[in-house]
Length: 284
Image (tube, rainbow, N blue to C red; front, side, top):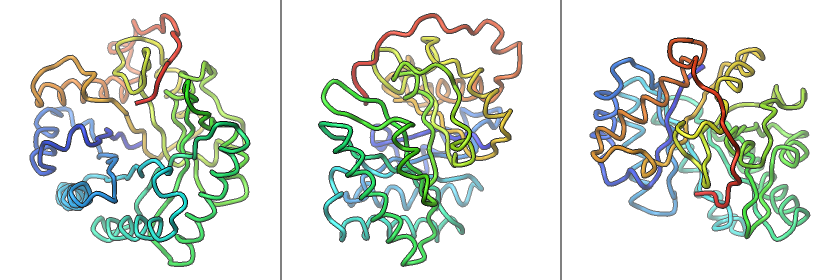
């Protein structure tokens, strides 16, 4: 498995070249294999940031994956979808191979609305990728509902992608936030996993492993048992890390990833036991 960290606009106040060097200095154990970058491709600054990050990671021999923006801003605009996917194809060209891209499903005021709109969105994405021969490996991420919106979980995602080549980005933290603690998928979905997101939850989403609500050991053992070999992305909102300086934050981030990567080392994780499962109110 490859182990990546997730970075979004919160970290963009540091130039990508410097951020990678800070991360490498903090990562004395070489735990980080790459970055999954979440950018608004319709923002010129963030688009340029991703291009620079791609060139930097390519030079360092590291992996770049992409997290697409929420679909509500471009779902009804085929030209924007085409423009977004062309940009990802350019990133693939910089990296020298297909790029893995994670897409969110549509939310809605009802399950029926969310499923219908997500199925249409997936069809538009796949048609554009296939008809243009774009170097993109797409996957659809399971989410958890919030107090304001119905957001599709694994069961709904399964029905939407089953007859297509859209992969599954299995977000284990979102399963926990949905009060699903089985850490397992139905057999038909196991083979569809192309990416993993994992994080702790505590009142909100994308927390470091300080709250013991996500049993990452159980999750990692399950992935290992099925022979999963693709990426595992640790998603932490860096504002939720305890450290003050940027270097210390990434040292802390890498420390969480190191714990995840060494899930089978009793010296690191023997005392890890999930404590309780408070409800998640919002997703950040």
